[in-house]
Image (cartoon, rainbow, N blue to C red; front, side, top):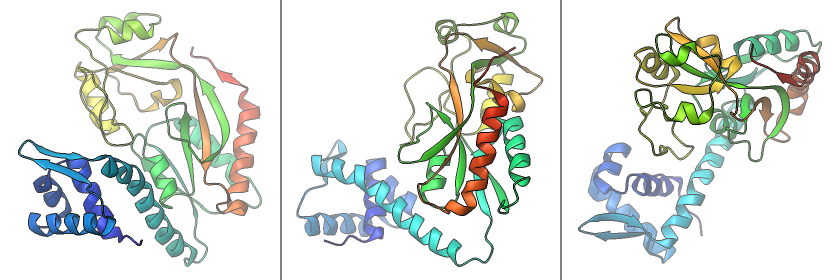
Length: 292
């Protein structure tokens, strides 16, 4: 049975909002056509996707299965369209995406080393927010990405390790924690006046906790400077910190490995020089970077 991408978009909006009115507003359409479209989809599939009662809307078991599959399906359609468009572009550059402010020195070294390769393709840098790299790769908006293991979604991607390093807590420069030589995760998690900032998960939801919800690096930077939040990040990401911030090593935080990631089989001849540049930097930099 064929499903239209419009039907999947409508279904996803309702499944994520669990409210027909909010879903219709998000889609920019009136509620009655949305309700009719969902009812038509249920008739075609011959299953009930939502339970509707005066208390609200909830997903049925069938709806939960479709929710898990619909997102990747729409990503695949978007990726196919994007790749087809880019395939028709003459001498199109390789697009490298990375989180804004992360691993700045490493990114510069990678770009310089890649430029020295005789067969290096033209390269563009696409800066993004936290956790967006996987989506940009899978939709074809980017060809390669700098990502971080174990925090980023690397499922189905090929990778080359670049740098393994410890993490630091970014705290307000005037806070008592700023004078500490080091911290533990338990100490970072137990600061009543300085909660941990919360980033959205891949599905857009936030983990539980008292800290503020953030979506961008600039939001986070200002909250730390105002004394409203702290965060734990790889040491090399300190390049973006403000004068009002201080970085303190977190001695028992998991080690973070920055990797170069790409989709298997995607533009292998253009990606190869960047892979070689990454391997060169890995050998040159050694196995692990310690915070000093």
